[in-house]
Amino acid sequence: MQQARDPWRAARLVDPAGSQSPPEAARPPRPATLIAELSYQCPLHCPYCSNPLDIGHEKYRQELETEHWLRTFREARALGVLQLALTGGEPMLRRDLDELCAGARDAGLYSSLITAGLHLTRERAEALKAAGLDHVQISIQSPDAAENDRIAGNRSFEKKIAAAHVVKELDLPLTINCVLHRQNLDRVEELLDLALDLGAQRLELANTQYYGWAVANQDALMPSWEQLRRAEEAVQRFRERVGPKVDVLWVLPDFYEDLPKPCMGGWGRTAMVVAPNGDVLPCQAASTIPGLEFANVREHPLAWIWNESGAFTRFRGTDWMQEPCRTCPLGRQEVDFGGCRCQAVRMTGDAAATDPVCRFSPHHDRIVAARESAQTDEFVYRSIKRPVRV
Amino acid sequence: MIRPRLVTGARLQYDDVREEHLLLVPEGAVRLNPTAAAVLELCDGERSVDEIVSALSERYEGADLRDDVHGLVDGLSERGLVVDAAG
Image (tube, rainbow over all chains, first blue to last red; front, side):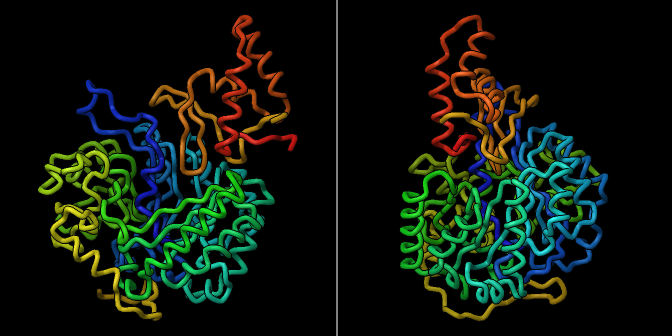
């Protein structure tokens, strides 16, 4: 995947099942979103990519066959999934993408292509639309061409703009996504105007989340409070000026909050991620949690993986919580579900600890200290070949 | 609002798992009651709001749905989910 997906966004998809009615409360919640990482191959090298650092590992080389994906889509729909994100790496590098889009439509899923846009020619876009693709999201690294190319580690800006025009010409809904960080936050105003010019229906301003490759680049990515404040003001002015024509999604980054977000809408509650090799994870970064084993769609029905597998039940609900979550003074156990497990393990060493973003966490000072990250403009670029140690 | 239609990319679907009508949009879903679903099925960019009202009144045996339909279309329009095909 070429951009860090904001783990908060899965929560915005309100599960139409809503809060479970009391007699059914014991059964697992219904998922609404399937994030299908079709391949970890990607022409870009974004330094905040949410893919695991070991994307080059041989376990990811054996990508799922077409039939595996099509069966997974049908099983996901039967569980309640409505939204399918076709992502990666770069999903357009899968040769069977047309077939996968058709299979998603047949299954009754709403499909979104999350792409860098480099391969989205008019011909390819027409074929995908004819197959049943519902929506295209194109990543932009910066509204400035040179800066875009520096962040992406690849000359790509012009192709992205051309791809956005193609999407509009075909009357497909267009989302522009830009992952924000210290290197591009001062251009939010230009970015908003670019999205408007391109005719985007949605602009996703995703402040970097520190997992995957972003951990290796935290010193180059961590923004200042002043940058965030100015960007937020620009978003507010734009919303007042443009109205609902462009839906701008803006979420303050975790590190500047003092209450955690319900990561992925709660563990094993609304979303699941299928890696290129068929491993099913509760979030993109869950492989950083020691001791979790991920069941694979080649070997198990998706319903069993969602309802019963160890990885999905480990932090589901609230029974696993420790103090201070267990007796949360704000009663937020079912509001934020303890926050992000990956952040907890990375910053406290304990995956069952309260997310240190929380002001009640005994480790909250580590979040405050991280805001003052040593600043550099040098990136460690995402690479599938080069092993990286953090 | 003269001739309402669903915004580009919005798709009506009956969810047979949850047994309810939904409006699917990029990375989201809006729950619809049966009346709202019936209204949105008629928002095809051809009919006017008044034509939608009369089509539904016929279906529901003369019920006065004028306020309901206008309220629903206006509400969805404010959220950017319904747009004017005439505009």
